Amino acid sequence: MIKSYISITKPGIIIGNLISVAAGFFLAAKTEAASASLLAYTLLGVACVIASGCVVNNIFDRDIDSKMDRTRNRVLVQDGLNIDHVFIYAVALLLGGTAVLYRMANPLSAVVVLLGYVFYVFFYTMWYKRTSVYGTLVGSVSGAVPPLVGYLAVTNYISLDAVLLFALFCLWQMPHSYAIAMFRMQDYREAGIPVLPVVEGINKARKHMQAYVVAFSVVALGLFLLGNGGVEYLAVASAVCLMWTRVTFRKMTADNYVDWSKAVFKTSLLVVMGISTVLGVELIPLTI
Image (cartoon, rainbow, N blue to C red; front, top):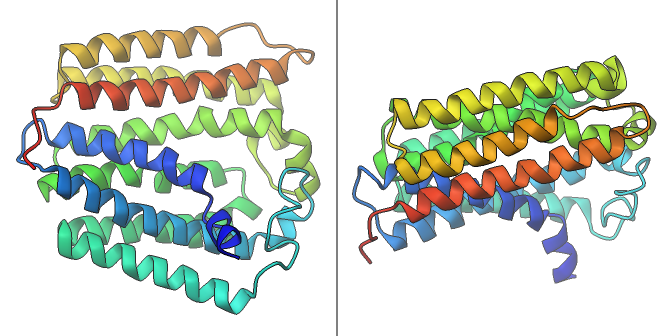
């Protein structure tokens, strides 16, 4: 039973988002006082809110999940848990996570995480994901909120660094998500989800992905030129952006698009890990 309740929070998604939370926190801590305890509370609060969003996503997407190979065995699809209890679980996670951020970080971070929650649950999950090819773009907004919350937990104000960080992760989400949609196109077709590769074709999706990777690289450089990224950040960001660009601009055909999209996806993970890690390496010593 406990394992089932943990599984519907999608731990893999939570961990991935917490990496970006840490990136925002580390960037802000370069110029503002921060502590290890604040980092821990921030990660806990954001984790709970993201878990709540994932639980609601599991509830609402049962019909879609039942049509896709990779999701048809999920707990809620198989009626393994009481839906009313699961909904209460989601509300408790949301309230608990928001309260932690409000009390242990600041009200601004709590407000922003709630805005991200609204975008993910209502605009993405319940609306655009099912009806529009722009669903991925809407989802990218909510996906870029965690690093912003990490930043605001330290600063309690929005700066140019915060704007660039938000833009950076918005742009990162797009080719990352399109790559997943491309190598899982059959699942998306069967579920009736109008993602770009399904609706407009793989060649148009590839062009969009290339444009987003270039834009991401520009913003990543801007974080060094206009923000507080250090020399170490510049070196790592340049290396991973070059790597991602090279992979994305490789030749793609109808025969190799699955391998191509998987390579783009795997490289996107290296990109976010590299940038998040280097911001931590550059960080001034935390005060316990």
